[in-house]
Length: 168
Ligand code: GNR
Ligand code: NI
Image 1: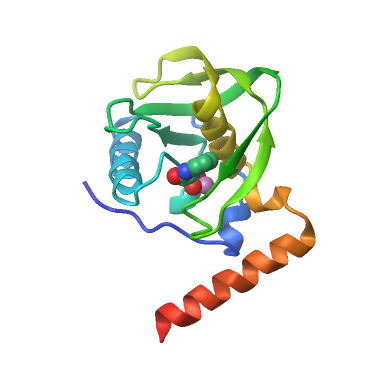
Image 2: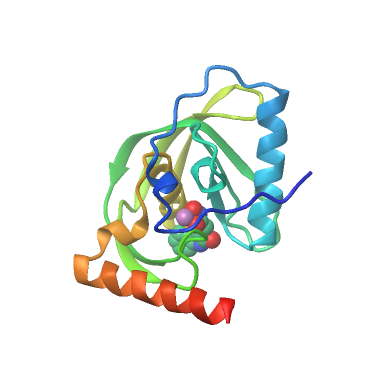
């Protein structure tokens, strides 16, 4: 097990589009375990492979308060979307920034589990938000992309300042 480095906005590697996974093997399962460890350590409720500079279509999520609901999504697809919800989002790749984003309230998702078995789930509320947020990462998209250009510029400045203070 190992903690992985999380890359941060505006790193251009966050813009890569992840490739479909053809084979679910032990190497992938080891990476999934490292991603859970990294996500829980952060702490966060989700982590997409893109964020640890692995450009393959998978992500881990646990929206429980006690690490009791680890979920793995390999090659996830959203089958249906219903309704709208607004959630204040954050991102481990955009640390210290929080903003409201509108997303579907309810989604049906198809994915493969850590054994490569296909499954489908219905998700709503925070789980639905998190799945949509992580799937955006796999397509090179970040929650700050939903903000106005002016707000996104403010986010860049705030992150620059946070980094200058941290380096001083
Ligand atoms: O830990 C996280 N919290 C969160 C809160 C609201 C909406 C989305 C998220 S995902 C985020 C972890 C992360 O950056 N995943 O990519
Ligand atoms: Ni994120």
